[in-house]
Amino acid sequence: MNNLLIMPILIPLFAGMMLILFKQHILLQRALGVIALFLTGASAAALIRRIETEGIQTLQLGGWQAPYGISLVADMFSVLLVLTASIVAIGCLLFAFRTIGRERESNYFYPLVLFLITGVNGSFLTGDLFNLYVFFELLLIASYVLVSLGGTKIQLREAMTYVIINVISSSFFLVAIGYLYSMAGTLNLAHLSLRVEEAGQDGLLTAAALLLLMVLAIKAGLFLFYWLPGAYSAPPAAAAALFAALLTKVGIYAIIRIFTLVFVHHPQITHMAIGILAALTMLLGGLGASGYWDIKKILTYNVIIGAGFILAGLAAFSLEGLAGSVYYLIHDMISKALVFLIGGTMIHLTGTSDLKNMSGLIRTHPVLGWIFFTAAMALAGIPPLSGFLGKVYITAGTFESGSYWLGGIGLFASMMILYSVLKIFMNAFWGETVLSKEEEKGTTKGLMLPIVAFAAFTVILGAGAEWFFPYAEMAAKGLLNPDLYIDAVFAGNPVP
Image 1: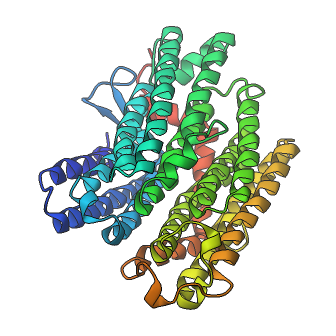
Image 2: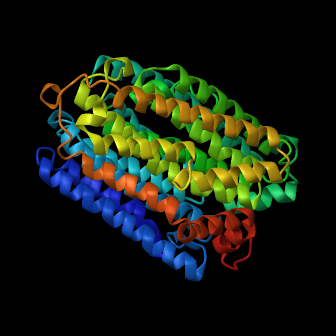
Image 3: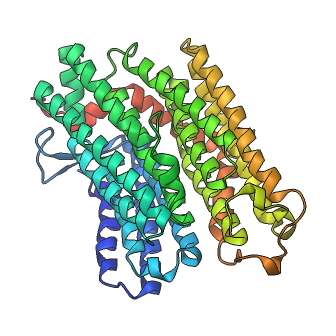
C-alpha cells in the first residue's frame, strides 16, 4: 500500500477547498495555488522514481481488496501525465496573475483551477471505470465555470454548447458503464480486463466497447469536435491554455488505457475504428487550422489535429507506435500550453485575434516572435524539437502495422500544421510594424516567464530525448503488457 499515490489528488483538492475561504485575499490565493501545484508535481516525481525501482504502485482505499474497493493505480504512463499536468498548470497560473483580471480572481478562479487539476489527476490515477466517470465530471464542472467566468456574450454562448454536448456524452458514458457492469459484473479495470478475456470479447462486449469509444472520442476532441473550437477560444488565455493542454488529454488517456487493458481481443474492429477516427480528425482539423485567419481558431484546430495524431499510435498497437504516442502526448501538453499563452499575449498586445489586423510584432517583441517560431517548428515535428521524435515513432508504428494510409495522413496533417502556424508567424510577426510599443493595448511584463519556461521544456524534450524517451518506452511496454497492471492491482490475492 502506497499512500503517496493519493497525494496528487488530495493536495489540489484540499488546497482548492481552503482557497474558497479566502475569496478576497488574492495574493494568498496565488501563492497557495502555486505551492499546491508544486507539491503535486513533486509527489508525481517521487512516484516516477518509485515506479522505476519497484514497479507499478497501487492503493486500495479503505483497505478493501480489489475489486471490491476503490483502486488507485500509478504506472509510468499515468504518472508521467500527472507530472506534466502539474508543470502546465503552474505555468498557466503564473500567466493568469497578469492577465485574468481581479474580477475573475475574486470569483474563485484559483480554486476552480485546483479542482480541475484534481479531476485530471484522479482520471489519470483511478483504477475503476465508474470513478473515471466521477473524476471526469469533477473536471468538467470546474471547466463549465471557467468557460463562462467573466460573463461575456461569447463565453455564455459557447459555454451553453460546451455544457450541453458534455452532459449528453456523460449520459452515454453512464449507459456504457451500466451496459458493461450488467455483462461483466465489475467496473474495476483490472478485473474487467480478466472478465472480458474470459468471455472472449463477444459481439455484445465489442458493441459496448464501441459505445465507450464514441463517448470518449467526443471528450477527446476526435471527429465529433463541433463543440471544441468555440469552447476553447472563448475563455481568457490562461484558462484556454489549460483546456488545450489538459482536457482533451484526459479523454485520450482514457481511450489508451481502456483499449490497451480491457478491449484488446478484436483490434481489427476496435483499433481500426480508432484509426479511422484519428485519420478523419487529422484531416478535418487540418482543414480548419488552414482555413481560418483567427489566431484562437487556428490554435484550437491544432489541438484537434494533435488528438488524432496521438491516437494514430494507439491504432498501430505496437511498441513503436505507443511509445511515440506517449512521448508526443507529453510534448503536446506542453507545446499547446505554450502556443496558447503566446497567442493570448499577442491578443493582449494588439487587442485583436484577427491576423489581418496585426503585423511586424517581431520588431517590438523579438523574443516572443522567435519563441513562437520555435513552438511552431515543434508542433510541425521539425528536428531536433520535441514533436519530432514522437511523430517519427508514431509514423513508424503505423507503417510497421501495415496502416500506410494512416501514417500518410499523419504526414499530410503535419504539413497542414506547419502551414497554419507559419501563417500566424508570417502575418503577425513579419511584415511592416502596425503598432509601436506606445500604441500597444498591453505589455508583456510578467507574461514571459511561463512562456520562456515552456519553450525551454520543448527544446529540452527534443534535444534530451535520449534521457526522456526511455520513460515513454517504459510506459509503452507497460501498456502492451496488461498482466503487469493486473498483477499489481490484485497483489497476489485470489481473483473472484
